[in-house]
Image (tube, rainbow, N blue to C red; front, side, top):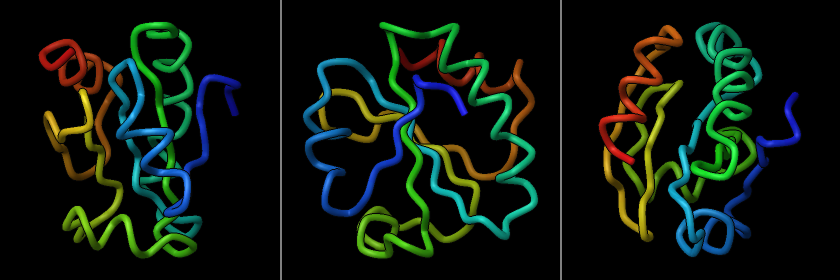
Length: 108
């Protein structure tokens, strides 16, 4: 796991995501989720390539149920891009690296 990826909880979400000075891509995931495991290495790569311009945060939906519920997460993996404390864009499902970078680039 990259040092550029942060594990965020319900308790730290406001400070780590909503108050972040740079955009944050939040990955809502779970240990048992196959597609979540498929995109993990891609998020790892992207976190290094976008270091300084974008933070990547992971929220385990099994351990943190308040935040996903608040933001209407119904399926995982769900990726939400937060900018200035607001949801800028959302994608549900595993993405290829090119799909993910296109999604990020169109919103940051």
